[in-house]
Image (tube, rainbow over all chains, first blue to last red; front, side, top):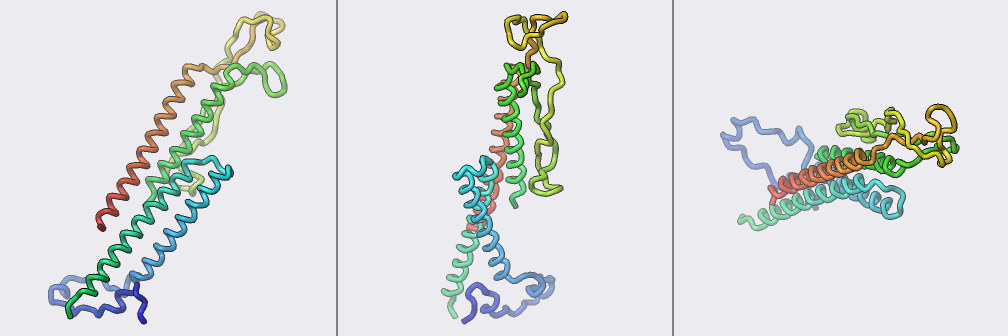
Length: 103
Length: 139
């Protein structure tokens, strides 16, 4: 079974139209795959969450009184998670769209 | 992505150090002797701000308190011959050397520091809102 995240693997490449051939489209092989980008950002979000958790714990246990730094960490984790959530929603949405496609 | 948040955080930390310094000045305004008990009043301290945020890396943007320096303004004299730390002889006999802290100045400085802290919080809030607006483009 193919990895569900690796969409580019399942979807066969669309035959290039003359217009698309004229414009030098970015070669997919040159950059990182969407899967690796997604997994990397997942790790990053996880790291930020862990950092925020650790900060809150240190604040609660009195090991630090640096409220500003902990607040920033929590905010960062929140923003990163929101972005990840939206990307996930978009991904599911596009998957459903493909699912409903009439063949 | 989080540069604005980092810069604002450095501002928050620096302003808090600044307020700590001011709090120390106000708390110690009546100190007339040093920790060894010699008549040597408290000298007002000032937080010196400098660009850059060394806690986050060498060339990280932001602000930090480079050091806390002592104010060289001369000490004041108060007529109080019965005081333990009063000057015993010379032409200033009977006077007590008092700290060079001016509580009014410190109070205003404290307000300025609190306002600056608020300004940094507002900028952080704005950065958060900007990120949220960008994310909302995906919906």
